[in-house]
Image (cartoon, rainbow, N blue to C red; front, side):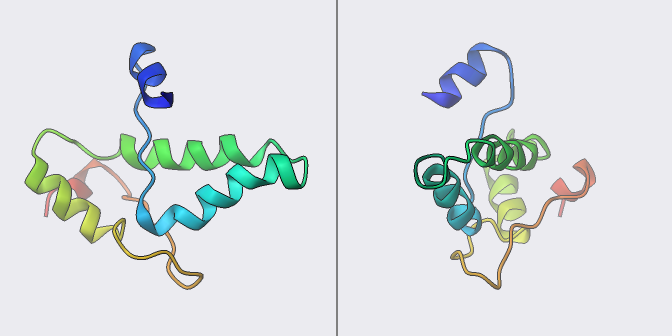
Length: 92
C-alpha cells in the first residue's frame, strides 16, 4: 500500500533489506510501546535513500548490487545495512 502511494506521487519506492529488518520491526513497535512516532519515518527515509541509489533496470545487476551492499544478510546486531556511496557503486 505504501509503495503504491509513493509510485502515485512519483517518489522512489521503499524496500526493506533483510539486514535492516530489526530496525524496521522496532520502528513499527515504538509508536505503540513507547509513544515515539518519529522513529518510523526516519527508518523509512533510510530505506528509501538506499533504494534511490540503485538502478533497477537490469535485474541481474541489481542482485549483485544488493549482495555487494549486504542487503540479503540475515539481520544481526553485528551486521548493519551498508549504503551505496554513489551511483557508480551500481556497476560491479
